[in-house]
Image 1 (cartoon, rainbow, N blue to C red):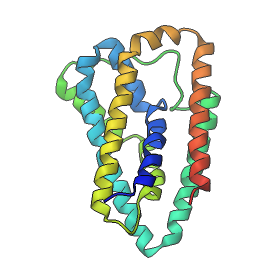
Image 2: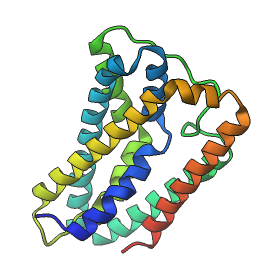
Image 3: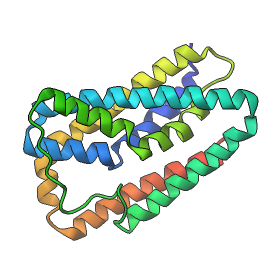
Length: 208
């Protein structure tokens, strides 16, 4: 079984995390503009599998530490919140790797295997993804319930959330590219994303 109360909070929280511009979402937008949504699905498949691997590895590692050192959980929460807050500030200033650029790099990969590998490697090598999974997932694990079932449900939600958000970025790639031709609009979008990121950071730092 799963904790439905925690689940009701987790779904919108992780959707905010997923929809926030980052390496994977920028890649989906760029490929959507260059090769089309249908071909970009191969990259999305690799990305959601990579995100699932990161989520499982992060939760199992943190859960093992929590059993022996409960105080580590509090430290991880504060470190994670601080990291998210730092990203939020960077995005507000339209700086850093997480902020959207007004000149997104055009990356064209021709083979389906290449697209899949690009998504997989991007997810596994994404520091934002590791930070989010380590800091966000443990608070949604109920120690009184079975871990495998909870983890399976949360990972499936994460994969669905990532896929939906990448589809939004890919299908809206051409429209977004026209909107982003003005740097002022880029800055506004970064400020909105930074604000959402800061909200998640505050919730993480103050949550039990």
